[in-house]
Image (cartoon, rainbow, N blue to C red):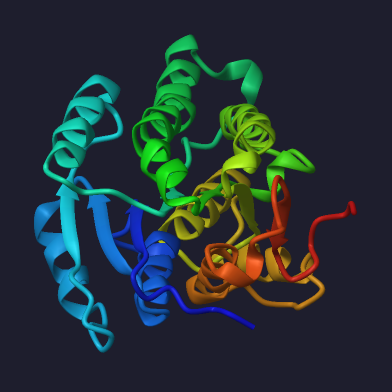
Length: 262
């Protein structure tokens, strides 16, 4: 099985923490040169300093704010104009705040749409020409199991994640002929800062303790535990390898079996 990414260049969004950071670490471990992208320069440098360079990799950072799509577009255009080109794009952005869809303001939908789908489109348009030239491309979107079964209390997220999943499937159909695959990894409950925030909010609303909410969530998972970020990252990294060349347009849950659909 060919899992070697030596000589491949990867652009990883939201890579200072959680699943994004773990994915960057996995890609580097497989030999890729990684460009870390997020808002905080200090955090980016800290993550970069811990990426392996055993295969002679050269890692970079790019400071960008996904709440400002126009500035992101200019930032990435300038970056690529400096001779940077990529074989791998990991789209990963923190999810919208929780709450019921019926209670969400229009701006909440608009902000989430821009941060997720619009920014993904900006990056895909900018990066895929080099993938086409290389005859090798991997786009992996870190989304949510909500694209299969919407999750209660995450109305805006359910809506926008579904849009991203359909965008991704459309791209898979359009780009497959160029040796580019487009796939979605759907994390279930994963031990990240976002999950901690969701648990705290649920505890506050229900009057239950954090421990009680955690236990109830774990009980809904056949594995009876939360995922670690590296377990989700391993799936994303595999989809970027030559071994995954014929996997295209799929939604891959990494959820311990929680999602109640095929």
